[in-house]
Length: 78
Image 1 (cartoon, one colour):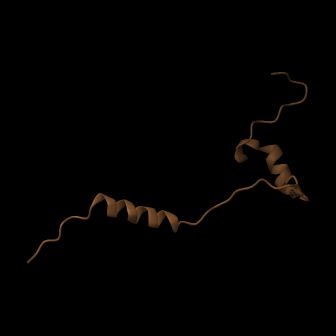
Image 2 (cartoon, rainbow, N blue to C red; image 1 turned 180 degrees about the vertical axis):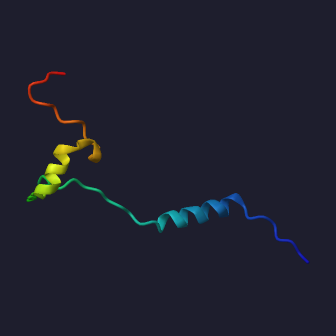
Image 3 (tube, rainbow, N blue to C red; image 1 turned 30 degrees about the vertical axis):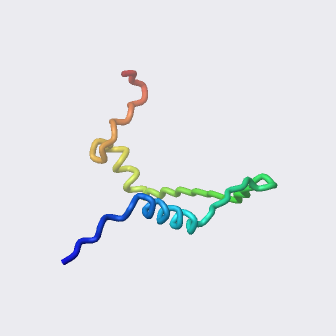
């Protein structure tokens, strides 16, 4: 079995030059006009909360039941 000698550095350099010549060229240019971004965004949010009268009275009678602090009593100061 015969062994090949390693390729010469000159052949390796020529191969690299041929591969570099085949590379695509990328060209980047700034546009002539400024970039304009038109954002027509309309955001609406509506929150509706309805509480039944009996639930409202339960919250007022025992706010701790719902994790709320006790309501202040009229006429008393803390």
